Amino acid sequence: MKGRYLIILASLCGLIASGVGLITNVAGLFFNPIAAELGLLRGAVSMTVTINNLLFALGGLMSPKFMSEKTLKPGLIIGTAVIAGSTALLAATNSIMVMYILNALRGFASGILGFVFVTMVINNWFHSNVGLATSIAMGFSGLAGAVFSPIVSSVIQSSGWRTAYLMNAALMVIMNLPAIFLIPSIDPAVKGLKPLGQKAAVAAGENKTDTALPIVMSMLVIMCVYAACGAGSTSLTQHFTGIAEERGLAASVGATMLSACMLANTGGKVVLGALVDRIGAKKSLLTYACLIMCAVLIMLFIPSGTAMYVAAFFFGLTYSMATVGVVSITKDLFGLANYSKTYPKINLCGTMFSAAFSSIIGFMYDAFGSYNVPLFIIMAMAAIDFIIILYVYKTIDARTKNA
Image 1 (cartoon, rainbow, N blue to C red):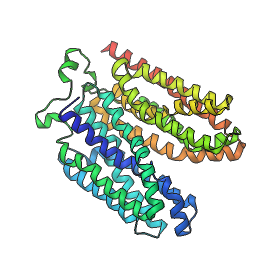
Image 2: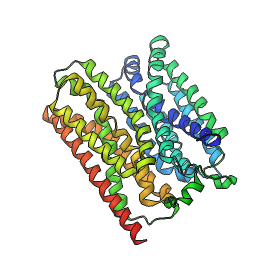
Image 3: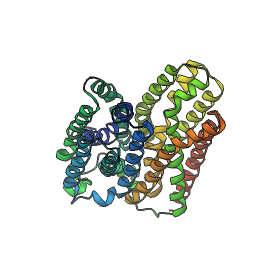
Image 4: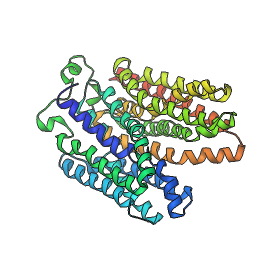
């Protein structure tokens, strides 16, 4: 992986870091200062993230229609202008309603240039190392959040949240510039180029995902359930502090749990991508699902600080299940030719369920006075994903034999 392929991958990482890392993963830093200055409830301010995420999912659904070979450059330029422009305008507003509108705009634009577009380009440009390339790009959402969170926090403390928004807008433009100037096409064939590893894949008879496979509605629904369970499970991380306190541990334990989880969020994606390339998506994802279920069991029955850190780390693998896992299974199940028709719909289900499930966990805690019920439900969701993985690849194997 070198030359133009490495440049394209780096450009795609910039899009993810800009549209996800600098929006969703640092959003919480703005809640308190905005609420304090404008006299708002933190719940009202946090609603900006829900609106952003919902429109991000809708933008992903529309991405194949907006981003084609003819509209590639204009789409990247306009999308970047909307994302950075709306972020800069957030620094000038005093109205929560205007903030909702601006977050809707940048959520939609970042969705168009986000996971769907990035994975479309990767699937076309990479035939070998596609799992690793996908995981590296996806991992930059968490990496950007981890790197820029302390920087944004420092700017907010020293110069205010308005200056921090302006800084983020400038960073978004800088991160998107490589994609604007260095991605020549969505499909390398348009420029007379070949995907990375095409010859080796064809010679080994491994290029099966280039064949258009039928879109069976029942399988599409099953994949939507998989995405909903995987993405919904990630909402538990927002409640780590509450889980730690319920176990009689200090709030700082919950904060450290979140750090351990975010470490696995980034590293787990890269490891999963490498495993998918080496041993296949089925074995890799089944292993991750088992580790996630073990992590939940530790949170339920071993309430010590060290055990909770270990549990939080392995629970962070759920982010990989919800991103790299969805991409890998969708491509294996429906084929590369139908990827742009199926992945946006599956991704929409996962993103919307994730946006809602954090509140659902909170309501369940209010109803039962404990996080045990949500934890058992999260473990059941991981088990459902485990069963779906087995069923989907059994279906793929049967179809391959019949062909």
